[in-house]
Length: 245
Image 1: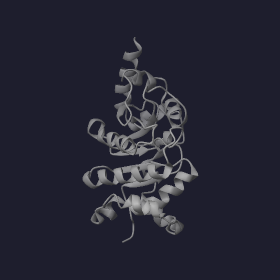
Image 2: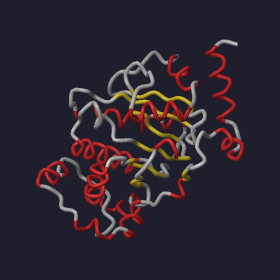
Image 3: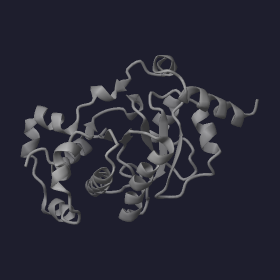
């Protein structure tokens, strides 16, 4: 059997397994279900101290570039989450991988996802012919708790439009993969050096815009592994997804 045939057969098998059977494949016993993750409205209620976090003048100027529909605030605060921890443990429809353009296993979140998914993930990636900056491609999650991995290539030159494009193309794959829950890492803020705060603004406003037009998405999760990103998202989520009038 060829390598290509192996991943195709396993992809089809895994995607059609009942949940209890799929759980036997996980390389972690510490998987986290969607129900385990607080919605933003509950998170904000349980962490009242975040109200004291101050937005900078730059934050407010960046926020002014985008207009939210206030009528949707209460509903959308139930559709987003902050998650502090390991994205590979999330038992949801799709997780996003901050990949390189060759779609080869690298370091950081990319390497962690490949290790947790198993070698067939790389085999399927090898069939995709790479991925340009700002675009996204989908694969099976294999031994991950997540059904799909959405691979996106963030900019290395600080391009805000390219980073926005990453989030847009990941979300656009919903029509192909039919996912209703998706988790994003902080794309391009690691070795690619994109400023963490501006990256969060781009992520939040792009997701907010998408959710205002898609009533069927159940949850979008922002994974914040570093303490600085936790602080940034706790601060800026209050602008983009206000829970109080």
